[in-house]
Image (cartoon, rainbow, N blue to C red; front, top):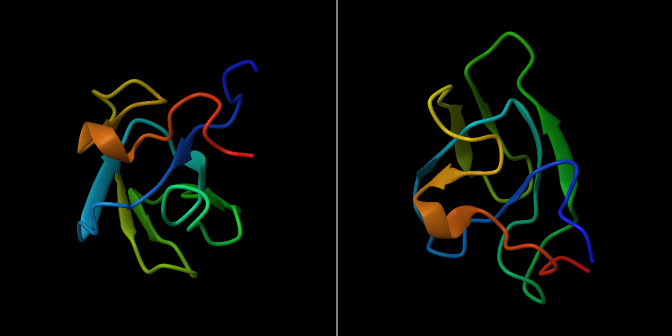
Length: 82
């Protein structure tokens, strides 16, 4: 399976804020099979957005790679999403 074109992130650790290096991404909630519907989120001109399913606050950090997150374990590993 190839890498996700659109970055995917999860909040399995339950942190209040996840910093990411992209403004367009999918939130999956928790690591599958405990995920919520995979929702596409677009920050637009804003620098943060809240997932409507799990209430995770995502904050944009231009210093991060588009597929990277802080904390790092919140970036969904390649092939982990079905």
